[in-house]
Length: 479
Image (cartoon, rainbow, N blue to C red; front, side, top):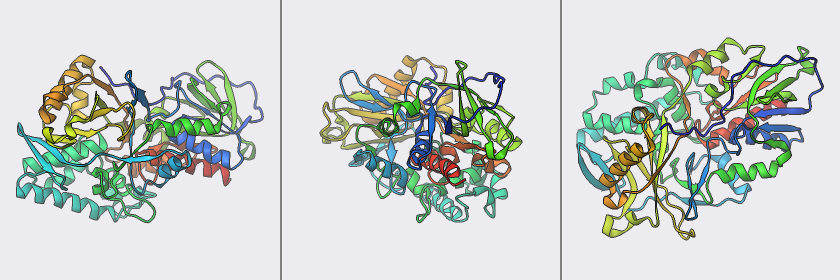
């Protein structure tokens, strides 16, 4: 069974012809009601601009979604973690009155390697042999050293951009002559961060993604992407679930300004006069809205499913054609309590890394202490080749395999019903960034592009989504 993508599904239809140019109804029409689109709307609202958000689904949030549990409580089936230097999402949570609580990270982790289960206290590298540990640390150190040479705002302009973009991350790894154990750990980290295999990633894209894991005063690092404590990207959870960020923001913007179940089929420029430039955005049902500007706030592959008139520049078209979504799902097992934390079960964190099975990286997804009703949950990312292998399996087959994996890592008590969802981010292979990267953010007339993939900092994260929306809105406000 394919996981449902937490993204608006847009239909590719021919644009309707326009009888005449009309005065724009809105300063901006925003296509997409995820955090990037809602962030753009927030900035436009604060600047006194008129706007409407068109969201294809019957809900806001895009790649963030809460799932209500029958017994009470919820799970997060899309993005769920926030961390230090993610300034925009932290500021929005505070503004909306949403509290944070730490991701559980007390006790022992599980390593499942070569058919053997080992528990260990939290360390930068799981306990493999000394040579493998040294190699893993050398790879991480080399990544962090190269990141210092990345132009975060325009990585394709970095001094070594062309050299980096000619090779995959896997090709860059070859000279390290990694042991089998070292390669397993590096591949596990890459799959967890990017949801693709190392040979699918441009080295330039990988380095730019790592460089983006910081802010204007803090350099990004690979350690931050894979860590929980000490400023890691998985440091905190949002009390009430991350979709509340979108729900409460949409409520502030007003229901008249956010239209749900409004899939867009085409965007057509209605005048060539630069000072009077306007666009007609036509929905699947044939209705249309007019805007002086349009913000397309979605991933590049999905943005390609809209028909544009006139056609977009070649660079933008090639970018959307060649970037592709990572293969990722989430499987979540829900329990009455977080029993694995107890001493009799090994005082476990709920974190495991494995070289076998479907569930190869896991986290504790339990709700905060004191939540009523109490909810214990284990979550795994289903990623890259493992996700592709199971892409057409039934839910029962996926549940069975994940249940077996959880039992191997945490004990027989871990077998439970598993719910499965997905929510990928677009990635770039060799040659895409240096040839077409600038088109991620370049506006075309009064047509602007947002989405977490187009952010400078925290690409692929909620913070990046907000940043991209604010940037697109600023392009309109400052014109």
